[in-house]
Length: 147
Image (cartoon, rainbow, N blue to C red; front, top):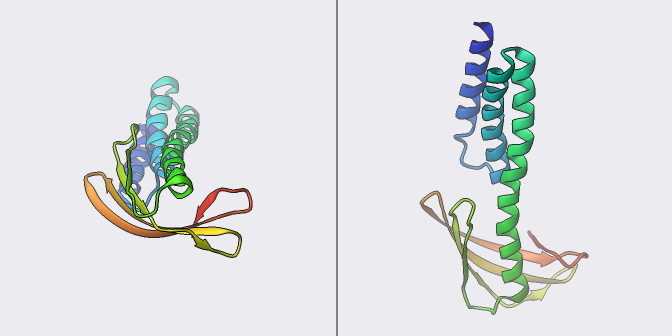
């Protein structure tokens, strides 16, 4: 009986915490993975240790999967900064989460470590349209880094 209460509290707290809209995909994946792992661990082991191990494994796996989704979008955005024609919009849809993006880069300008580019990013995330204006500069490794 005590274990059921702990699992319920863990799942409830993860559900409430995951309502924060400022989480990235890795953090959301970790929360969902922890809840699923705790439930699976309890179902398999029927004790506290199994529940905690399940939550830990679920957190790690969920974070890795969620973070990979973020990497897809960063890779696409990096491509726009690298090869995008100034004033021409490039769009994509993330196949894993359904979010879509339209990015319009501006001409490159000089920065402290190399060239920088501004861009307008229109995103449709979870059915909500968001517009962001960003600047990315090339770092010493040749990667575009948001400022």
